[in-house]
Image 1 (cartoon, rainbow, N blue to C red):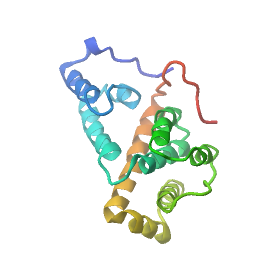
Image 2: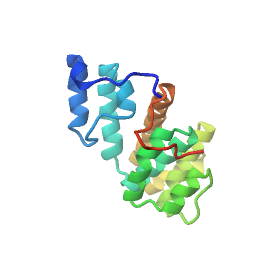
Image 3: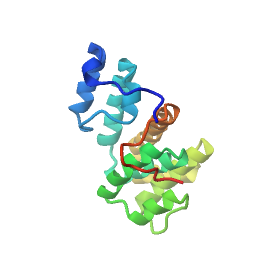
Image 4: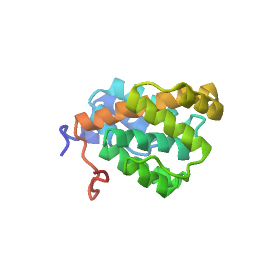
Length: 182
């Protein structure tokens, strides 16, 4: 059960309605998950949703890799909502089910492609150590360029923020969904 009551669309303030409509008409297609909690502060929600839209849909990363980083982040914090929302996108984006299963089980995946190794090492080192080794950083720069390394760090940071929002307010899973992580 969420700590926050859902906002009904017909009871939104004009600022909330403007942001709600922008999210619902964008690539996300609806207002759910963290945005239900964030909508209580429309200016914050608007700024966050624009950043998230860029990081999800506008970086140099194909969905296979951006969703991989998102799943690693969700697993690190055992963020059930984030995991259940992004696992289907990872599969659709072409991330191998065996890689997803390994992340779910907190194991280093076998048989990763070089770009997946770069994302995995960068993401796991940053989450676990709060820094990235020179080797992992250089691997990411070699694979994605400086732009990609910057975008990957921002993507991880954004999904930490989203995960913390979901966890702090105990945003419930959608009806009929069971927690995917142990």
